Image 1 (cartoon, rainbow, N blue to C red):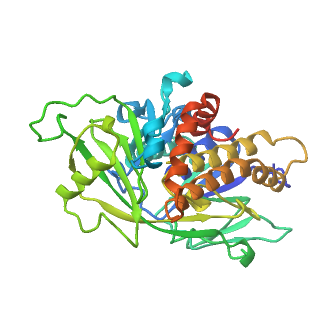
Image 2 (spheres, rainbow, N blue to C red):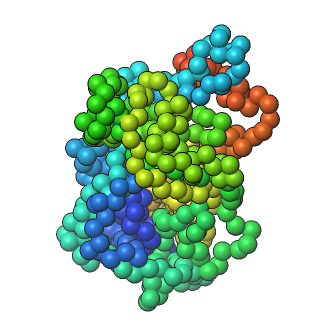
Image 3 (cartoon, rainbow, N blue to C red):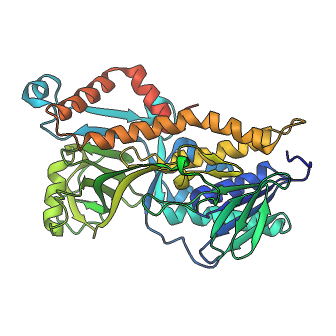
Length: 424
Protein backbone atom coordinates (compact mmCIF):
# COMPACT_ATOMS: atom_id res chain seq x y z
CA UNK A 1 0.00 0.00 0.00
CA UNK A 2 2.74 2.48 0.90
CA UNK A 3 5.76 3.04 -1.27
CA UNK A 4 8.06 1.41 1.32
CA UNK A 5 5.70 -1.56 1.76
CA UNK A 6 5.43 -0.62 5.43
CA UNK A 7 2.00 -0.90 7.08
CA UNK A 8 -0.26 2.08 6.44
CA UNK A 9 -0.35 4.69 9.22
CA UNK A 10 -3.78 6.35 9.36
CA UNK A 11 -4.82 9.36 11.45
CA UNK A 12 -8.52 10.08 11.99
CA UNK A 13 -9.48 13.51 13.32
CA UNK A 14 -12.86 13.56 15.05
CA UNK A 15 -14.56 10.93 17.22
CA UNK A 16 -18.13 11.63 16.22
CA UNK A 17 -20.30 9.04 14.45
CA UNK A 18 -18.42 9.25 11.15
CA UNK A 19 -14.92 9.27 12.63
CA UNK A 20 -15.63 6.43 15.06
CA UNK A 21 -17.31 4.29 12.40
CA UNK A 22 -14.35 4.88 10.09
CA UNK A 23 -11.82 4.00 12.80
CA UNK A 24 -13.67 0.83 13.79
CA UNK A 25 -14.10 -0.27 10.17
CA UNK A 26 -10.43 0.41 9.43
CA UNK A 27 -9.40 -1.62 12.47
CA UNK A 28 -11.30 -4.61 11.06
CA UNK A 29 -10.79 -4.27 7.31
CA UNK A 30 -7.14 -3.12 7.39
CA UNK A 31 -5.57 -5.59 9.83
CA UNK A 32 -2.00 -4.39 9.20
CA UNK A 33 -2.70 -0.66 9.38
CA UNK A 34 -1.89 1.49 12.38
CA UNK A 35 -4.93 3.63 13.22
CA UNK A 36 -4.79 6.66 15.52
CA UNK A 37 -8.01 8.45 16.52
CA UNK A 38 -7.81 12.10 17.65
CA UNK A 39 -10.52 14.11 19.38
CA UNK A 40 -10.57 17.25 21.51
CA UNK A 41 -12.97 15.84 24.09
CA UNK A 42 -11.64 13.79 27.03
CA UNK A 43 -12.03 10.01 26.78
CA UNK A 44 -13.99 9.87 30.04
CA UNK A 45 -16.62 12.39 28.92
CA UNK A 46 -19.96 10.56 28.79
CA UNK A 47 -21.64 11.20 25.44
CA UNK A 48 -24.42 8.65 25.82
CA UNK A 49 -26.89 11.26 27.11
CA UNK A 50 -26.54 13.62 24.13
CA UNK A 51 -30.21 13.97 23.05
CA UNK A 52 -29.73 15.32 19.51
CA UNK A 53 -31.89 13.26 17.20
CA UNK A 54 -30.49 11.71 14.03
CA UNK A 55 -32.07 9.72 11.22
CA UNK A 56 -30.05 6.87 9.75
CA UNK A 57 -30.75 5.23 6.41
CA UNK A 58 -31.03 1.46 6.10
CA UNK A 59 -27.54 1.30 4.60
CA UNK A 60 -26.11 3.15 7.62
CA UNK A 61 -27.97 0.88 10.04
CA UNK A 62 -26.65 -2.22 8.29
CA UNK A 63 -23.07 -0.92 8.41
CA UNK A 64 -23.25 -0.17 12.15
CA UNK A 65 -24.73 -3.62 12.73
CA UNK A 66 -21.80 -5.25 10.91
CA UNK A 67 -19.40 -3.18 13.00
CA UNK A 68 -21.00 -4.52 16.17
CA UNK A 69 -21.98 -1.03 17.30
CA UNK A 70 -25.77 -1.01 16.99
CA UNK A 71 -28.31 -0.89 19.82
CA UNK A 72 -31.53 -2.16 18.33
CA UNK A 73 -33.37 -1.67 21.63
CA UNK A 74 -32.73 2.08 21.51
CA UNK A 75 -33.64 2.70 17.87
CA UNK A 76 -37.05 3.50 16.41
CA UNK A 77 -37.39 1.94 12.94
CA UNK A 78 -38.72 4.16 10.16
CA UNK A 79 -41.39 2.13 8.39
CA UNK A 80 -42.76 4.90 6.21
CA UNK A 81 -41.79 8.37 5.00
CA UNK A 82 -44.71 10.69 4.30
CA UNK A 83 -43.96 13.95 2.44
CA UNK A 84 -46.70 16.47 1.76
CA UNK A 85 -47.28 20.17 1.19
CA UNK A 86 -49.40 22.48 3.27
CA UNK A 87 -52.42 23.91 1.41
CA UNK A 88 -52.83 25.96 -0.62
CA UNK A 89 -50.08 23.98 -2.33
CA UNK A 90 -50.94 24.41 -5.99
CA UNK A 91 -53.95 26.63 -6.10
CA UNK A 92 -57.60 25.75 -5.66
CA UNK A 93 -58.00 24.16 -9.10
CA UNK A 94 -55.08 21.77 -8.68
CA UNK A 95 -56.10 20.98 -5.12
CA UNK A 96 -59.61 20.08 -6.22
CA UNK A 97 -58.28 17.91 -9.05
CA UNK A 98 -55.43 16.06 -7.34
CA UNK A 99 -56.22 16.48 -3.67
CA UNK A 100 -53.39 17.43 -1.34
CA UNK A 101 -50.08 16.44 -3.00
CA UNK A 102 -48.21 13.81 -1.02
CA UNK A 103 -45.65 11.03 -1.39
CA UNK A 104 -45.68 7.90 0.74
CA UNK A 105 -42.63 5.63 0.70
CA UNK A 106 -43.13 2.40 2.66
CA UNK A 107 -40.59 -0.18 3.73
CA UNK A 108 -43.06 -2.96 2.94
CA UNK A 109 -43.36 -1.77 -0.67
CA UNK A 110 -39.55 -1.82 -0.99
CA UNK A 111 -39.33 -5.33 0.50
CA UNK A 112 -37.16 -4.27 3.45
CA UNK A 113 -37.81 -4.38 7.21
CA UNK A 114 -37.26 -0.63 7.58
CA UNK A 115 -36.24 2.41 5.56
CA UNK A 116 -33.93 3.47 8.35
CA UNK A 117 -34.05 4.30 12.05
CA UNK A 118 -34.15 7.24 14.44
CA UNK A 119 -32.08 7.49 17.61
CA UNK A 120 -30.11 10.03 19.58
CA UNK A 121 -26.57 11.16 18.87
CA UNK A 122 -25.47 9.68 22.19
CA UNK A 123 -26.98 6.30 21.39
CA UNK A 124 -25.02 6.21 18.13
CA UNK A 125 -21.68 7.48 19.44
CA UNK A 126 -21.52 5.59 22.76
CA UNK A 127 -21.75 2.06 21.25
CA UNK A 128 -19.26 3.02 18.54
CA UNK A 129 -16.79 4.35 21.11
CA UNK A 130 -17.21 1.28 23.31
CA UNK A 131 -16.52 -1.00 20.34
CA UNK A 132 -13.47 1.08 19.33
CA UNK A 133 -12.06 1.11 22.87
CA UNK A 134 -12.51 -2.67 23.13
CA UNK A 135 -10.64 -3.12 19.84
CA UNK A 136 -7.87 -0.76 21.02
CA UNK A 137 -7.47 -2.77 24.24
CA UNK A 138 -6.98 -5.93 22.20
CA UNK A 139 -4.35 -4.30 19.96
CA UNK A 140 -2.81 -1.39 21.88
CA UNK A 141 0.25 -1.15 19.62
CA UNK A 142 -1.79 -0.83 16.43
CA UNK A 143 -4.95 1.02 17.49
CA UNK A 144 -4.32 4.23 19.39
CA UNK A 145 -6.67 6.78 20.99
CA UNK A 146 -5.65 10.42 21.39
CA UNK A 147 -8.67 11.84 23.22
CA UNK A 148 -8.23 15.25 24.80
CA UNK A 149 -5.83 16.12 21.96
CA UNK A 150 -7.27 18.83 19.68
CA UNK A 151 -5.62 18.90 16.26
CA UNK A 152 -4.31 22.40 15.56
CA UNK A 153 -3.08 21.90 12.00
CA UNK A 154 -2.46 19.44 9.20
CA UNK A 155 0.45 19.79 6.80
CA UNK A 156 0.98 17.80 3.63
CA UNK A 157 4.62 16.75 3.36
CA UNK A 158 6.58 16.86 0.13
CA UNK A 159 8.43 13.82 -1.28
CA UNK A 160 10.54 11.93 -0.52
CA UNK A 161 9.13 11.81 3.02
CA UNK A 162 5.54 12.33 1.89
CA UNK A 163 2.42 11.80 3.95
CA UNK A 164 0.87 14.37 6.27
CA UNK A 165 1.96 15.95 9.53
CA UNK A 166 -0.67 16.08 12.27
CA UNK A 167 -0.07 18.69 14.94
CA UNK A 168 -1.88 17.84 18.18
CA UNK A 169 0.61 19.41 20.56
CA UNK A 170 3.28 17.10 19.19
CA UNK A 171 3.71 16.83 15.41
CA UNK A 172 3.48 13.26 14.09
CA UNK A 173 3.75 11.97 10.54
CA UNK A 174 1.11 9.69 9.00
CA UNK A 175 0.68 8.22 5.54
CA UNK A 176 -2.91 9.49 5.47
CA UNK A 177 -5.07 11.81 7.60
CA UNK A 178 -8.87 11.78 7.50
CA UNK A 179 -10.78 14.75 8.94
CA UNK A 180 -14.29 13.80 10.05
CA UNK A 181 -15.44 16.90 11.94
CA UNK A 182 -16.54 20.39 10.96
CA UNK A 183 -19.58 22.62 10.64
CA UNK A 184 -21.45 25.10 8.50
CA UNK A 185 -19.92 28.32 9.75
CA UNK A 186 -17.10 27.08 11.99
CA UNK A 187 -15.32 24.99 9.38
CA UNK A 188 -12.96 22.05 9.84
CA UNK A 189 -9.29 21.99 10.62
CA UNK A 190 -7.51 23.22 7.46
CA UNK A 191 -4.36 21.87 5.90
CA UNK A 192 -1.53 24.38 5.95
CA UNK A 193 -0.96 23.87 2.22
CA UNK A 194 -4.54 24.28 1.01
CA UNK A 195 -4.59 26.83 -1.88
CA UNK A 196 -7.28 29.54 -2.10
CA UNK A 197 -8.88 27.96 -5.19
CA UNK A 198 -9.88 24.97 -3.07
CA UNK A 199 -12.18 27.15 -0.97
CA UNK A 200 -15.42 25.30 -0.21
CA UNK A 201 -18.79 26.05 -1.76
CA UNK A 202 -20.71 28.07 0.83
CA UNK A 203 -24.20 29.50 0.94
CA UNK A 204 -26.17 31.02 3.81
CA UNK A 205 -29.81 30.02 3.30
CA UNK A 206 -30.91 32.69 5.78
CA UNK A 207 -33.03 30.02 7.39
CA UNK A 208 -33.24 28.86 11.00
CA UNK A 209 -33.93 25.34 12.20
CA UNK A 210 -35.90 25.13 15.44
CA UNK A 211 -35.44 21.67 16.97
CA UNK A 212 -37.05 19.91 19.90
CA UNK A 213 -39.59 17.21 20.66
CA UNK A 214 -43.38 16.97 20.67
CA UNK A 215 -45.93 14.74 22.36
CA UNK A 216 -49.34 13.81 21.05
CA UNK A 217 -52.84 13.85 22.49
CA UNK A 218 -53.75 10.47 23.93
CA UNK A 219 -50.15 9.29 24.36
CA UNK A 220 -48.83 8.33 27.74
CA UNK A 221 -46.18 11.04 27.47
CA UNK A 222 -48.88 13.71 27.26
CA UNK A 223 -50.97 15.06 30.13
CA UNK A 224 -53.90 15.67 27.79
CA UNK A 225 -57.23 14.09 28.87
CA UNK A 226 -58.13 13.47 25.22
CA UNK A 227 -58.49 9.83 24.12
CA UNK A 228 -55.54 8.17 22.41
CA UNK A 229 -55.10 9.14 18.77
CA UNK A 230 -54.47 6.22 16.46
CA UNK A 231 -51.28 6.92 14.56
CA UNK A 232 -49.32 4.50 12.44
CA UNK A 233 -46.06 3.69 14.25
CA UNK A 234 -42.71 4.43 12.71
CA UNK A 235 -43.84 7.13 10.25
CA UNK A 236 -41.53 10.06 9.52
CA UNK A 237 -43.40 13.13 8.31
CA UNK A 238 -42.06 16.01 6.24
CA UNK A 239 -44.25 18.98 5.45
CA UNK A 240 -43.46 21.71 2.95
CA UNK A 241 -44.81 25.08 4.11
CA UNK A 242 -44.48 28.57 2.67
CA UNK A 243 -41.86 29.33 5.36
CA UNK A 244 -39.79 26.17 4.82
CA UNK A 245 -39.87 22.43 5.52
CA UNK A 246 -40.92 20.95 8.86
CA UNK A 247 -40.31 17.35 9.89
CA UNK A 248 -41.37 14.95 12.64
CA UNK A 249 -39.20 11.89 13.28
CA UNK A 250 -40.73 9.07 15.35
CA UNK A 251 -39.06 8.24 18.66
CA UNK A 252 -39.04 5.03 20.65
CA UNK A 253 -41.29 6.34 23.43
CA UNK A 254 -44.09 7.59 21.15
CA UNK A 255 -42.91 11.18 21.00
CA UNK A 256 -41.44 12.73 17.86
CA UNK A 257 -38.39 14.86 17.17
CA UNK A 258 -39.23 18.17 15.53
CA UNK A 259 -37.13 20.02 12.94
CA UNK A 260 -38.93 23.25 11.96
CA UNK A 261 -37.17 25.35 9.30
CA UNK A 262 -38.22 28.96 8.75
CA UNK A 263 -36.86 32.16 7.26
CA UNK A 264 -34.43 33.96 9.55
CA UNK A 265 -35.53 37.34 8.23
CA UNK A 266 -39.23 36.64 8.77
CA UNK A 267 -39.21 34.14 11.64
CA UNK A 268 -42.77 33.11 12.65
CA UNK A 269 -41.54 30.94 15.56
CA UNK A 270 -39.26 33.14 17.64
CA UNK A 271 -41.87 35.28 19.40
CA UNK A 272 -44.42 32.51 20.02
CA UNK A 273 -44.92 30.87 23.41
CA UNK A 274 -45.30 27.09 23.72
CA UNK A 275 -49.10 27.13 23.47
CA UNK A 276 -48.97 29.21 20.32
CA UNK A 277 -46.29 26.97 18.82
CA UNK A 278 -48.45 23.91 19.40
CA UNK A 279 -51.39 25.63 17.69
CA UNK A 280 -49.26 26.57 14.67
CA UNK A 281 -47.77 23.08 14.40
CA UNK A 282 -51.23 21.53 14.42
CA UNK A 283 -52.21 23.85 11.57
CA UNK A 284 -49.09 22.95 9.59
CA UNK A 285 -48.83 19.17 9.65
CA UNK A 286 -50.88 16.61 7.76
CA UNK A 287 -53.92 15.30 9.69
CA UNK A 288 -52.46 11.77 9.81
CA UNK A 289 -49.80 13.09 12.21
CA UNK A 290 -52.43 13.28 14.95
CA UNK A 291 -52.95 16.17 17.35
CA UNK A 292 -49.78 17.57 18.90
CA UNK A 293 -50.26 18.15 22.63
CA UNK A 294 -47.00 19.70 23.83
CA UNK A 295 -43.72 20.97 22.45
CA UNK A 296 -40.44 21.06 24.34
CA UNK A 297 -38.27 24.18 24.58
CA UNK A 298 -36.80 24.65 21.11
CA UNK A 299 -33.17 25.27 20.19
CA UNK A 300 -32.24 27.18 17.05
CA UNK A 301 -29.51 26.63 14.47
CA UNK A 302 -28.54 28.65 11.43
CA UNK A 303 -28.73 26.70 8.16
CA UNK A 304 -26.23 26.87 5.35
CA UNK A 305 -24.30 24.84 2.81
CA UNK A 306 -20.61 24.13 3.29
CA UNK A 307 -19.22 21.69 0.70
CA UNK A 308 -15.59 21.01 -0.10
CA UNK A 309 -14.97 21.00 -3.84
CA UNK A 310 -12.88 17.84 -3.50
CA UNK A 311 -12.53 15.25 -0.76
CA UNK A 312 -8.80 14.88 -1.25
CA UNK A 313 -6.04 17.45 -0.67
CA UNK A 314 -2.68 15.70 -0.96
CA UNK A 315 -2.68 13.04 1.75
CA UNK A 316 -5.58 14.61 3.63
CA UNK A 317 -9.17 13.41 3.09
CA UNK A 318 -12.31 15.11 4.39
CA UNK A 319 -15.48 13.16 5.07
CA UNK A 320 -18.73 13.75 6.93
CA UNK A 321 -19.34 17.31 8.10
CA UNK A 322 -15.74 18.18 7.25
CA UNK A 323 -16.57 17.51 3.59
CA UNK A 324 -20.17 18.70 3.42
CA UNK A 325 -22.73 20.17 5.78
CA UNK A 326 -26.18 20.14 4.23
CA UNK A 327 -29.62 21.57 4.84
CA UNK A 328 -31.70 19.05 6.86
CA UNK A 329 -34.56 19.03 4.32
CA UNK A 330 -33.69 15.48 3.19
CA UNK A 331 -32.16 14.25 6.46
CA UNK A 332 -29.22 12.70 4.60
CA UNK A 333 -26.14 14.56 5.82
CA UNK A 334 -24.95 11.94 8.32
CA UNK A 335 -25.70 9.09 5.94
CA UNK A 336 -23.64 10.70 3.20
CA UNK A 337 -20.73 11.09 5.63
CA UNK A 338 -20.96 7.46 6.71
CA UNK A 339 -20.87 6.38 3.07
CA UNK A 340 -17.77 8.54 2.57
CA UNK A 341 -16.05 6.64 5.38
CA UNK A 342 -17.19 3.22 4.26
CA UNK A 343 -16.02 3.75 0.69
CA UNK A 344 -12.65 5.10 1.83
CA UNK A 345 -11.87 2.00 3.89
CA UNK A 346 -13.25 -0.24 1.15
CA UNK A 347 -10.94 1.43 -1.38
CA UNK A 348 -7.92 1.05 0.91
CA UNK A 349 -8.76 -2.59 1.65
CA UNK A 350 -9.15 -3.68 -1.96
CA UNK A 351 -6.12 -1.83 -3.28
CA UNK A 352 -3.45 -4.31 -2.19
CA UNK A 353 -2.20 -5.13 -5.69
CA UNK A 354 1.52 -4.75 -6.39
CA UNK A 355 2.35 -1.17 -7.31
CA UNK A 356 -0.74 0.31 -5.67
CA UNK A 357 -0.12 3.51 -3.73
CA UNK A 358 -2.08 5.66 -1.32
CA UNK A 359 -2.22 8.40 -3.95
CA UNK A 360 -3.75 6.10 -6.60
CA UNK A 361 -6.37 4.97 -4.07
CA UNK A 362 -7.27 8.57 -3.24
CA UNK A 363 -7.57 9.54 -6.91
CA UNK A 364 -9.99 6.67 -7.44
CA UNK A 365 -11.96 7.56 -4.29
CA UNK A 366 -12.42 11.14 -5.50
CA UNK A 367 -13.87 9.93 -8.78
CA UNK A 368 -16.08 7.25 -7.21
CA UNK A 369 -17.62 9.44 -4.52
CA UNK A 370 -18.40 12.42 -6.76
CA UNK A 371 -21.80 11.22 -8.15
CA UNK A 372 -23.23 10.37 -4.72
CA UNK A 373 -21.87 13.52 -3.07
CA UNK A 374 -22.87 16.06 -5.69
CA UNK A 375 -26.26 14.51 -6.41
CA UNK A 376 -27.18 14.83 -2.72
CA UNK A 377 -25.61 18.29 -2.38
CA UNK A 378 -27.47 19.55 -5.45
CA UNK A 379 -30.82 18.03 -4.41
CA UNK A 380 -30.79 19.48 -0.89
CA UNK A 381 -29.49 22.83 -2.12
CA UNK A 382 -32.25 23.06 -4.73
CA UNK A 383 -34.98 22.24 -2.22
CA UNK A 384 -33.59 24.62 0.40
CA UNK A 385 -33.34 27.51 -2.06
CA UNK A 386 -36.82 26.82 -3.43
CA UNK A 387 -38.36 28.03 -0.17
CA UNK A 388 -36.75 31.43 -0.67
CA UNK A 389 -38.11 31.93 -4.18
CA UNK A 390 -40.73 34.62 -4.49
CA UNK A 391 -41.72 33.59 -8.01
CA UNK A 392 -45.46 32.98 -8.54
CA UNK A 393 -46.18 29.28 -8.79
CA UNK A 394 -43.12 28.00 -6.89
CA UNK A 395 -45.35 26.22 -4.37
CA UNK A 396 -47.54 24.91 -7.17
CA UNK A 397 -44.48 23.43 -8.89
CA UNK A 398 -43.47 21.61 -5.72
CA UNK A 399 -47.01 20.31 -5.33
CA UNK A 400 -47.07 19.03 -8.91
CA UNK A 401 -43.70 17.38 -8.35
CA UNK A 402 -44.98 15.52 -5.28
CA UNK A 403 -48.11 14.39 -7.08
CA UNK A 404 -46.10 13.17 -10.06
CA UNK A 405 -43.63 11.33 -7.85
CA UNK A 406 -46.43 9.49 -6.04
CA UNK A 407 -47.98 8.46 -9.35
CA UNK A 408 -44.74 7.29 -11.01
CA UNK A 409 -43.94 4.11 -9.09
CA UNK A 410 -40.58 3.32 -10.77
CA UNK A 411 -39.35 6.81 -9.97
CA UNK A 412 -40.58 6.54 -6.39
CA UNK A 413 -38.85 3.17 -6.03
CA UNK A 414 -35.61 4.68 -7.32
CA UNK A 415 -35.95 7.51 -4.77
CA UNK A 416 -36.48 4.95 -2.00
CA UNK A 417 -33.30 3.12 -2.99
CA UNK A 418 -31.41 6.43 -3.05
CA UNK A 419 -32.66 7.25 0.46
CA UNK A 420 -31.67 3.83 1.81
CA UNK A 421 -28.32 3.29 0.13
CA UNK A 422 -27.23 6.41 -1.77
CA UNK A 423 -25.91 6.31 -5.34
CA UNK A 424 -24.24 3.03 -6.19
